[in-house]
Image (tube, rainbow, N blue to C red):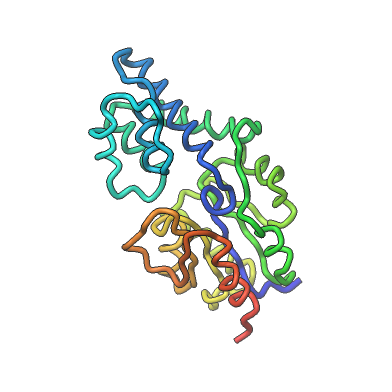
Length: 245
């Protein structure tokens, strides 16, 4: 089968929606901080993150106003949790363990997530010569299982995990275009994601179109298309997928 277009989709925040995974990550970071220092205010990282995503805790601990300053300019909740926890003293080993714990909870179905409305129908409507690829920094455990529960596993042709975005993304994109025989057609690859620097900027640098799901303001982003939700981008995706020139 001939591939004429490659559609690259991010996972968290793009295909898989819901704050449960990142809030779980924050809670596990708080547990690591409490284990290291019993004086650590309970749920501090979680409270900062909850405020960032727009659902502040009813019983915020002391120190949120000071801690949230470390999150300035963060593009998403994972970066907020990473920056705040690092400033509070969580080391890389503990942070990796917290991330793995959150992904395990996602894989096991203990966290509520949803797919963007109409995404399955959009993917079904695309021609068979559009190769749909999910590219994520997450490990395979924590991606495949929720993708199946969301009803999207059969609608994705390829999954690339542990992609090391943004630094690892150019090589992934080069390989995807080469496999499709589109080495000289960067316009035939469209990258869709919610973080400009991670998901889209490397593709744009190669001359590919991009579509940004801008849940959080990204004033420095320069995508081809942008909207606050993925469904608002469906017309642009369909138009790109049917372009033959």
